[in-house]
Amino acid sequence: MEKQLEVSELSNSIRHLSSDKVKSALLVNTVVRGKMSSVLRSLKFIEVPPVIYSQITDPLNHPVDDPRFTYGGVEYSLTKSMIFHKQLLVKNFPRIFTFSPNVRLETAEKAKTGRHLTEFTQLDLEVRDATREDVMKIAESLIRESVLEVKLFYPEILEKRKNVIDIPSAHFRKYRYSDLRDKYGKDFEMETSSREKQPFWIVDIPLTEREFYDREDENEPGILKDMDLIYPEGYGEGISGGEREYLPERILERIKAKGQAPSQFRIFTEASSMGLVPSAGFGIGIERFIRYICGYERIEDVHPFPKIPGESSL
Ligand code: AMP
Ligand code: MG
Image (cartoon, rainbow, N blue to C red; front, side, top):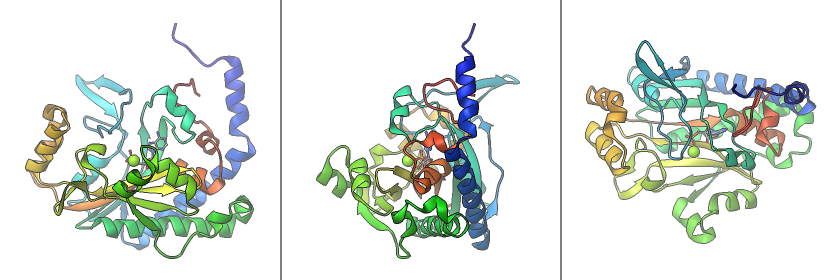
């Protein structure tokens, strides 16, 4: 007999979904999704529907269990991110976004971070012929406009979030990955996150630290034209993105350099031979953004039905 929720766990789940924290988070969720959509629409983006399962999904750069199933004799995986679908779409639709539900069955110890769920939503976007810097500007405006909208509609939620209220109107600070690592060592990301008062960027991440699809800097071999946005006050990473590799021979080289089997990505490498276009994009985790705005210690308080790594959930 497989495990099911115990009665006590079920009543905890039901109590959780009606808590004040979840209520505030859902108000912020409504404002954030609405504002981000309207900002993107005003920038001439079109919204595409999410892909829930596919024969190809993001390999990620860290181990997770893979929820696979067979249907009609074909093997599918639940979406971990829509990176490949975005690269295919952007050829025909130069500015796209989607609210993409992702399933990543993270290892149980990830529950300790307070910022990992096994089911979450990314606002995932991609822009044809764009540079990293172009999409960084879009990200800054999504964050800033959303915060201003929350301030307008629900100032009481931001009462104790002085640094969020003071979100800068100028560009966010930018650090090079290697500079932070040299200064603070292995835990540089969380160390810097704890020290800073405002969101900041980490750029120029080494190729070994990322998946094969981010584009290498032609002027700096081994370094990618990519970026992460980190929330301050210890809230950690909120966005990952960058310019994408689109040349079929380089995509293949990068898959091999990672020690991955090209057969695993056959559909994508074949599609790349049919022609991809230069693009840049990113994904912003909605739950992590709401957690930061609300100032919650744990990400599960953002979601009425949180899926916590390693735990049984409703
Ligand atoms: P990635 O490209 O893998 O960095 O994912 C894009 C964004 O999705 C991250 O920057 C986070 O905001 C969010 N994200 C990734 N994994 C999780 C997770 N397990 N739980 C909640 N949010 C996540
Ligand atoms: Mg990331």
